[in-house]
Length: 205
Image 1: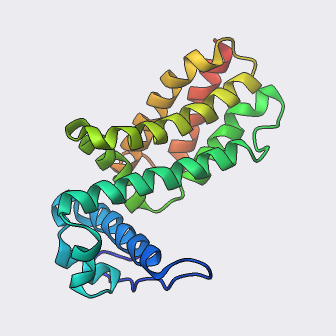
Image 2 (image 1 turned 60 degrees about the vertical axis):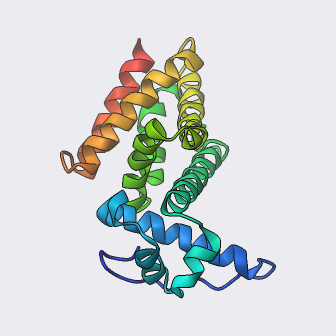
């Protein structure tokens, strides 16, 4: 992750990837980093170009406006993290004894939350922007759905009745714990303990 104020050069296209796709991806990643460092207000064409290490004209070529850049970057971040969560769900990581599910799910979430702080902040910026911009709501829902699917699988493994119905409640609680952590009110160890206790309480209900 680039530190505050750092500039990360655009990645070159990988084999088989069109140069335009690589440039667009680099610009979206730069937007997410800027949001993590300074919020939505930190994003403009010049700042994004500098952060991505590309000519200024690249930003206006791929994105007509600041709003379009932000929407595209946040939607891309949501899809990327949703994919990671689903990969963890499908990896067999939850194939443990029912009593071990709370600790295992905590580890799975903490692994997912090891994404850099800028992406964590981008998640909450996405929620706020989705409240103002209906076009972003599907992306926010995809991210939330990935959380709920993983949690439902864990609760089912723990033997919880109505796991799918309870999953949204647990998901909202976990997001609240993450927000509290991002705000600096808990350490990683405290966050893990909180997640374990939350899942254990639902598993015992």
